[in-house]
Length: 213
Ligand code: ADP
Ligand code: MG
Image (tube, rainbow, N blue to C red; front, side, top):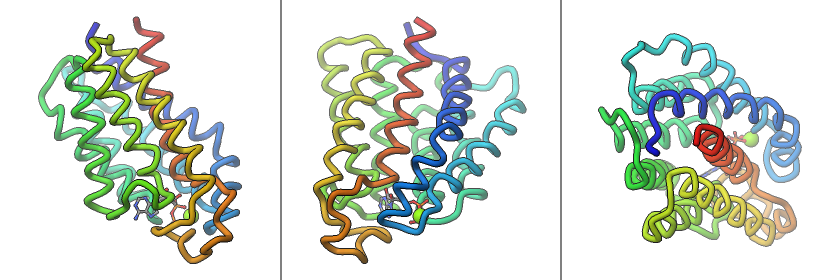
């Protein structure tokens, strides 16, 4: 089974739902080691995205949908996360541009391009206590699942599990990027909020793919 515009649209709408449901959780995490706005930032962005997705043309492809997410997040989210996620979706859109149906290899390209876009923009490495600590194990797990011949929903499920493991690993870390880096050792014991929003977005991708299969 490959994933087309219906999956992309469903992923985006599910993302808007889970970000809205977890707005308080994300904000609470950001209050511990940041400035307490990550939930509001993301919810504002995805509420705007939800309104735009309805306007997609009938012959739109997944890359078109991802591009709308990118431009909308860049113009509405602000903070660090807006440009970072905006770049992620823009690079993801570019990686699958023009493709009507995404197979496993396309999904791995999409995820890799998203992660690389965040790194290009924010210069964080694994271990810096940022969303990259979720994205990189997600990409690695998706690539491993592809190499094992897994299905598209399984590849996305592997990505979500990798992201969840990576997000948990941020608890033990001192931050080297973003606002949490001002806190030094005081950030230890707290989970990075951007890694948690990453888990939500990738879990949404996996869940809608599982529903469709
Ligand atoms: P702000 O920090 O401007 O208030 P948000 O609260 O919306 O923005 O987002 C904070 C999240 O952004 C952090 O939890 C972290 O995951 C992510 N982040 C911050 N700086 C970077 C960076 N340089 N690279 C990757 N992710 C980053
Ligand atoms: Mg913040």
